[in-house]
Length: 244
Image 1 (cartoon, rainbow, N blue to C red):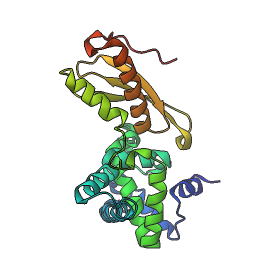
Image 2 (image 1 turned 180 degrees about the horizontal axis):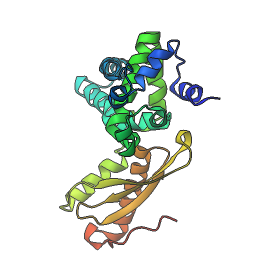
Image 3 (image 1 turned 135 degrees about the vertical axis):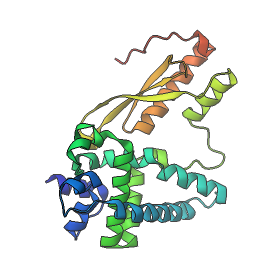
């Protein structure tokens, strides 16, 4: 299986127009160095609108208990840059990008903004190539890969990140900061490691997951358990946690 075939399998859509597919993967920096290649900005513009429509329809249909405000919050969470970058990494998009030489040496493939924009461009290309139903199916598939996009229903228990933030604020501390410290495994089956820290740099805990968001939840849960034993964030040692 070629890299393109593997990418399309994970995306859930096979392009008929290969030129359109290549355009979606082309950053403006590459286009500027390789005329007449065309950058993906126009497809990104379209993809942003397509994504918003698909996500809105998805939550409107599946979450009848959410009012306008709840739907807006759920949509905002699903289309934010970190979510799109996570989708892109999950399906191997960064490795497929065409970047200019300068951006390549600067680590452009690891830039969340660049890969998130490319993810929108891919969705714009799916819409042009296959229409709304194909776009909706692709977005549904992508959301299934990343639990962090699913809205909480009223009455659900609070997630560990929300509970940790409230715990810290109750103790007079600022919200925790999450740092990605390690990524292992192949692009389609990566394991992410994240640390949760206080604003002063004190490391509370570490967590692992099959997405950055899930690793953050795991780190938050570990921090909550640690705080329940320590009683106060000030009692937690600043030593880095043992990740073994």
